[in-house]
Length: 292
Image 1 (cartoon, rainbow, N blue to C red):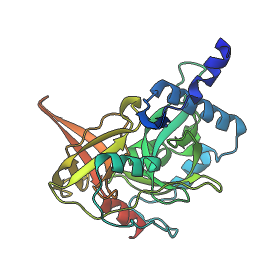
Image 2: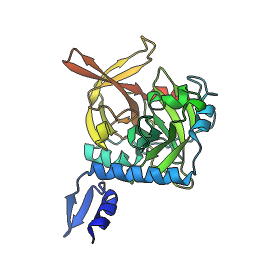
Image 3: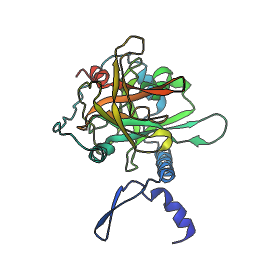
């Protein structure tokens, strides 16, 4: 194999086989984040070149017709969780990783001629036919700016764990104070692996997060619910947890021990450099937007 061929293949040396079988034994493989980023960027460029997606101007124009906290207009068919069986961390990760997505954006920064195509956040599927969830603040450009002002942006997309790229096709509903946006992907005849919605969780309950902090793709952390805080401010209800996440994790799923969604990553709050509070959105905020 030539040196040039090796370079071309690098983005496709898949970093996510997780398990390999060598001589009848299970051997762990390791994450190659740079290769995955390169693969995502190459696939995003191919999608850009194909022009087979709805323009951002049109998506933003449709989003302007929505109202804050207005439920989804169409009927969404949500999957049901098979049971409430408690799972170990490894089982949870392997069961739900396929439903966790990388959110990316293609744009021109205005300071160079390059189109930037990198990942910016996390999202997850809630139906097999392409309905997904992330934070309001991840898609705030689409939701707050008229299409004419988005000339530097060319594409919002997501990537699956397998590196498959899909364009964001439509925003279905959002809650600004709830920091939630529900959107649909253009997936054709493909199917996603959705995360079923659970019920509101109580303090002390086990939770885990699967997110992409600073490009550390599919980072698993676990902890517990520290507090449920009612909407005492304009920010709405929040669920504070002890599982770790950071920049890039926005929009990631918070999952209970049965693999059901109980919340969404939102933000962090530093307390005098002594403690970082992780604030998440409770699942009921999503259910209200879905009329469920």
